[in-house]
Length: 115
Length: 118
Image: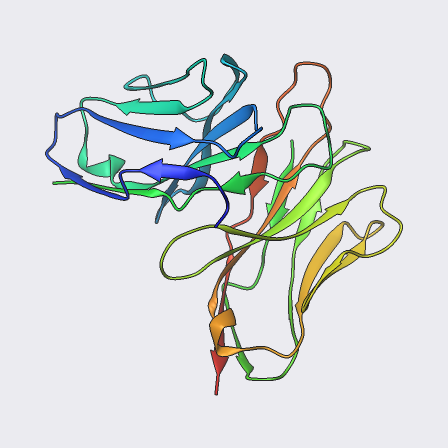
C-alpha cells in the first residue's frame, strides 16, 4: 500500500459526460501529480500541484482540469468525454518539490471507460 | 529534452534465475534521479528502487539492484532469483534537476513486460 488513495477505482461513463477523479496523497506529501496511461500514448504526465498551487502542466487537454484543496487532496475533472479518454488515470504524491531524492508514490489508479 | 529508452518490449526468464532489464536515458541535467516501477496486471504502479545521479554506489532493495553506469547513461534493473510474482510490466523513469519552482515530474520509458516461467 503506497498510501496514495484514489477513487473511484473503476468508472464507466458515456461520451459527452463529465467525471471527477479524486486523490488523497500520502500523509505529509505536499505535491500531487496526475498521469494518464493509455495503450497508444503510454504514461503521460498531465499536471502537478504543490501545496494548493499549480506547479507544472503536461499534455493535459483543455477539457480536463484539476485542483488541489487546502487539505491537500486533489481532483481531476474530465469533461465532454470522448472514447479516446478511456485510460488508467494515476495520482501520485511526493513530499516536496526541490528535494531531488524523494520518491514519487503512485495510487492504484482509476480505470475510466468511456462508451 | 529528457528521454528514457527501454529497448526490450518483452522478456522471459526462468524462475529462480536473475534477469536484467535495460534502461538508457538522455538528459543535460547534472543532477537527476532514476526510478524503477513495477506494474502488475492489476494496474497499480509500485515503486521499486531509486538511484541519484551523484550516488556513488549502486542502489539495492532486496532482490532488486540498479546497475548505474553514468558515463553510458544507463540504469539497468537487475532482479535476482526471479519469482512468479515478478511477472509484470517494468518502467524506468527519470526526474530532472529541480530549480526553485521548477517541476520534478517523472518521465517514463515505454516499459518492459517480464514473464517469469516456472
